[in-house]
Length: 123
Image 1 (cartoon, rainbow, N blue to C red):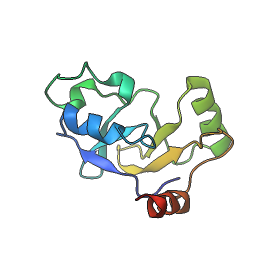
Image 2: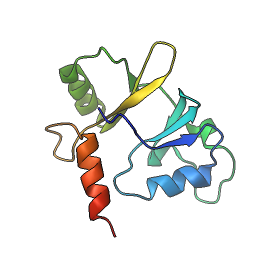
Image 3: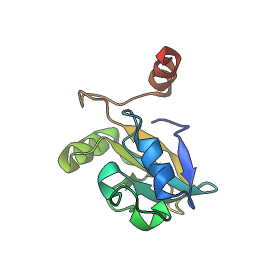
Image 4: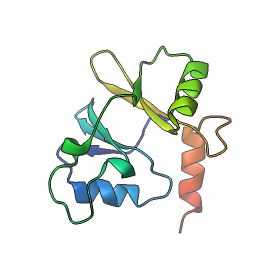
């Protein structure tokens, strides 16, 4: 689990979410109010370019969160079944703990070390 995923505030705009998703490695924008996850946004959730307003209205938590006690094999199966590569890890009260990030080959999960190494390689 990535323990320090990038987040945007719950009042982030559609333009801010779209800008975050311009990064090929970002598949899921996490909208938060403090530590509480309020919504998630993917590229396909967003309205047509030029639409203004808050991203939260286009977000969802359905099928995009798991509890911290969900076994890794179950998370992997869920991601494969849903055809997605990211799912937020949240507590029962909605606190964001991290992000499960399925690698591109879908054989394992990203780690904080993987993300840090990729960041060092970027110009």
